[in-house]
Length: 294
Image (tube, rainbow, N blue to C red):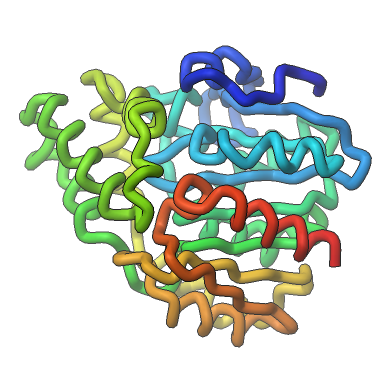
């Protein structure tokens, strides 16, 4: 599990630090799939799973992973199926349930149970599924600026129309993604060249474009609404952590989620927006570590 823990100089270093694990047919999909993931640090305080959303990958957490490692965590940060540098073939589903199934298989292969987990955006929806259906995996949980209920970003839903987007050049997709990254940051100095290039890199090819379209096509409010009646069954201590300026995932959804999960706590971070681990990395990591320490 030991590895270079950063600061990574750029996204290429981060990608080079990822490990690869092949999950056999039937474990996460009907075919064998490859999963790329960061695995760094020693588990003096336990293991911490960081899950990204769309259109990001594990690189979303590159600024905060070192703080978690210094605090004594083994940090696992995978790329979801079809995201980042994990398997991107056009041959499997990318639903939240399938991503949860992949995470379960990945952690089983690594021999891990009882982790602290963080889920951002669609990764938050996957975290909720894990806490409900795979409770043995989850010790404590942080849900941050998560997709929940029936609130989904129109831009991402638009990418899910392949007849509209498949004929369009990659450059148009990149331009749309650049606008989305800017719109989700309150602190524009955090829209660094490295963050912009790193998040966009997996999608800046025809293969990457198609994989992103397939990921967007998997967005479905039925999947999150099907969890609503089950939020009350979650037993993992939960922090709902929200960048309050988020233009897409509204703070009232996070507050409602905290009310529906037993003994959950809502914490807002003012002056920060959707891409919270990038927008306010020090406050994000401090809030997560304070909760886990409590």
